[in-house]
Image (cartoon, rainbow, N blue to C red):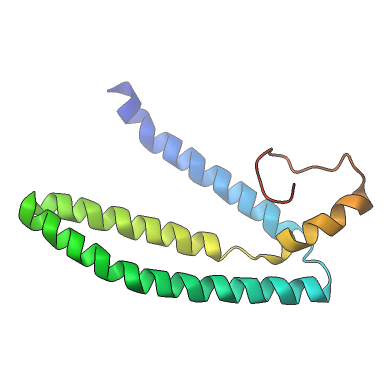
Length: 126
């Protein structure tokens, strides 16, 4: 029971950490003109993919929600819909992070020396 009470706080802590990491990435320099152009093309392609994926997924989500509503209960269907919407929103927000600082990171490392590292171990740029 105690862990259930802590879950919202861990969720808020996770959101706060995600915001700190996002601000760190955004604060990095974007790199050269070619890097910016390539990263913008990658971002555009990713957004086109996401739009197509969400269009296909929306039909599947509606069908599954209807089946859940008929087979189990409308509350189960509502829980499924809210989970699907939250997941889609998280994917959209994640794709909105500017890719330019990430593309410039490999060129910045040699200039700053071998000791310059990201503050967390499993992120991109290693």
